Image (cartoon, rainbow, N blue to C red; front, side):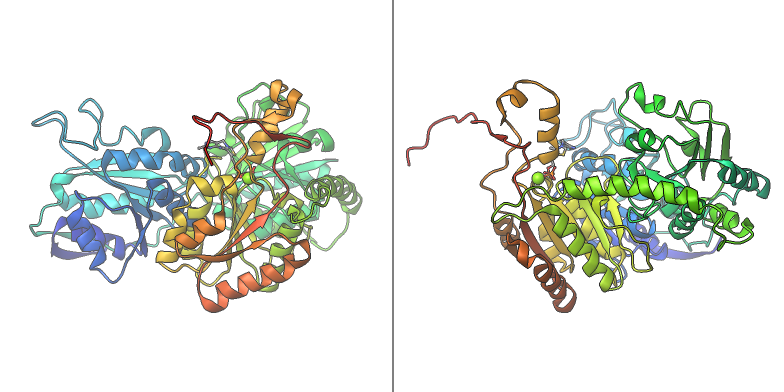
Length: 577
Ligand SMILES: Cc1ncc(C[n+]2csc(CCOP(=O)(O)OP(=O)(O)O)c2C)c(N)n1
Ligand SMILES: [Mg+2]
């Protein structure tokens, strides 16, 4: 272990350890208790504070950052209250298994009074009680000399499979303005991951892939976390396997893979696989019988992944193989005698036929009947995808349902865009996630798809993009509604679907452009289908060439079920004029 000695205040020591550990950004919301901490942060030129105006946005930014290259993100929120506010987004970080280090300070509620003036939990709960359900590990720190070690450990644990958020709670007593001496820890190169699986196990997988009639590859986040996207895609192509994924991952094998059939639960019935090879997936569901039942008719299930999480939820799992996803897939490919042979072409053709049909349906869903002054979602997803690919490839973050990226035209190429989603489905992610993604991928164009409903959870995040001048394009898929919720209201078969009048899901009279303008972001409304391509091209040019954020308010058909309209809402009083 390499260290260097430092004499500084505890706050400066925290910042110095973060800098030495190569942490470039600290996502935060300010508070008075942490005055000396922020003093140290803002006076160190080697780390940049990124200010968000709500802790949910702080968390979404940190999460979006860590989702791009799996580099740990560090965030700081104010005491127990700030931590409580960040929990709504920590659910996305936790479900995404993202390496985020949350730092908070905490008051002493045991030694003297058992309740501080405000903002902390009562004495019966510890400083890490709030975060406990959504973190992988947490620690409370009393001795300032141990801060470097605690930070080094937190970064390491967050980034060790299964990745996940960790919490460091530091007693605020530590924030004194006196100098102490301790050792800063130099980062080691140890990237703690399992080795690849053994040749024996990989040959077993290969022989099952060879013998299967209808193999299906279930691609999860373990693939991108190990950097194995392209190899996994190649493996699926070679064996003519169907590709499916979880509700939330469009990236392990690109959603543009021509053999992709979307989510496992809808694809299994159509494809009827005899072999399921799960790679880096933690299978999950709705908490109902069919979550597992859907796996019942598969002859053989194999799970390959970097940790035990990837073996869960497969009753009767025949082969569970722990190993690094990327290097195991690469080794499998190298064990194939001739990648060019076409012995699986008939099988691949069958798979492609079913996948094409699935994609056609998704594409049709994205092109409902034309309506004047509305833009159909299919045109927007295609135009963004094409334009970004023509620029060399970009990153698209997503928090909306109106424009499904499952409906993109298929095609794997070197410029494919990365499609990132919120893994926990907790609204308020999209605005911040795009900012985090752009900070993590400075040279790559970033587009944040944000639903109108999603935007209003976290619109103050737009200010961060403006304040720190983070050049990215927001595409607001504005269907004037909580579209996905309205559709669920219809399916529920209650009175709303009978009457066609929907309550609590129509978001009328809100103007995203005015919101953006007031936070300092320019943009324009897009409501003419003939102008989709040119507007998107121009908007991305503004972002890339003028180095500033920009927002498109894309007016889409109303997100209610067909023939649905807004129910009359409760009004406290009728307006007089
Ligand atoms: C924290 C949280 N609260 C509520 C919900 C329920 N919910 C799911 S989607 C959604 C609204 C999405 O609206 P929008 O972003 O406009 O999506 P779209 O219209 O494209 O479906 C809501 C309220 C949720 N997922 N998370
Ligand atoms: Mg909407």
